[in-house]
Image 1 (spheres, rainbow, N blue to C red):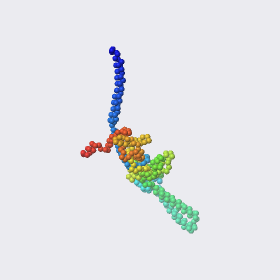
Image 2: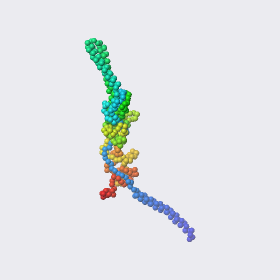
Image 3: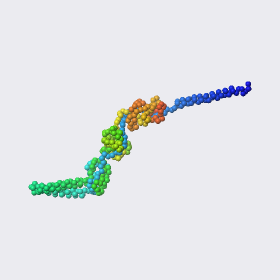
Length: 371
C-alpha cells in the first residue's frame, strides 16, 4: 500500500483529538474555579464588631428649642425732678429694695417752694378760723365764707404737691433687684426724666419660647423644663413652664410660653443663651439602645443582632429618644446582643467576631491574676 493511502485515517484521528482537547481544558478550568470559590467562601474573614445589650431606665419625651434668658422685671429709674446730684448711695451690683434711696439731688429750690406754700397755708388757716367765728355770728356772708374755705383747701393741696416734689429729690428704687447700670455721677446736673439707674430683678429669670402650633396640646403650665447654658460649660438649670399663651400667632404659626427659673447662686445671668428642653411625657423602665446602633431606612428602623457569631438584621419599632438613647418598643429583648459599633460593613448573615474593649482578653486576665 502506498503511503498516501493512510492519510484519511490520520486526518480523522487528528480531528477527533482536536475536538476532544478544548472540552477537557474547559472542564479543568470549571473544576478549578469551583475549587477556588469554595476556598474563598471558607477563607472569608469574620468582621470585627463591638456588641452590647439594651439597658432599661426612664426616658422622657421633650420639646427642644433655644431662647435667651431675660429678667422678669427690669426698670429704668428716672429723675422725677431736676437738680444737681449731691450723693450716690449704691453702685452696680448692689442689691436694693423697693423704696430704698439710690441717690440724692440738691432740692434747694423745691425746699424753698415747699416752705413758702406752708407759710401761706398757715396764714390762710388763721384767717379761716376767724371767719368761722364771724360766720357763726352771722357777720359774714355764706358766699365769702365758702370762698375762703376753698382757697384754704387749694393751698393745702399745693403744699402737699410741694412736699411731694421735694421728696423726689431722693431718687428711690422702684422694685427689688440689683443695680445693673448707673448713669449718673456726683455733680451732674439732671433734667427732669433723665435716666439715673437700671434696676434688674434676678428672681425669677424667664425665657420666652415660641413653639409651633402642632405642639399646643402637649405643653401646659407646670411642666418641667431643663435649661442648658453653654456659657457655663453646659450646666443644666431646672425650670418650669409658668404660662402658656391661649392664642396662636397667625403670621408665624407659633404660640408663646413663659419659662421661669430660679438661681440662688446667681450664676445664671440675663442675656445668656439657653438650650431649652420641655418634658411633656415619660415612659418608665423603658428598653433603650444607643441611637448610633440603629439603621434607619425608608419606612423602617433595624438593628443587627448577633447569634452564634452571625449577624442578623432585625426590624424594630422605636419610641421616645433623648441624650443619645432611643426607646425600643418591639423587636428587641433584654437578652439580645446587638452590634453597637461596626454595623456599617455588615449584611444579613455576615460572620462577626466580638472585640469589645470593655471585656478583658484572656492574656490580660492572666496578667492581672499574676500581678
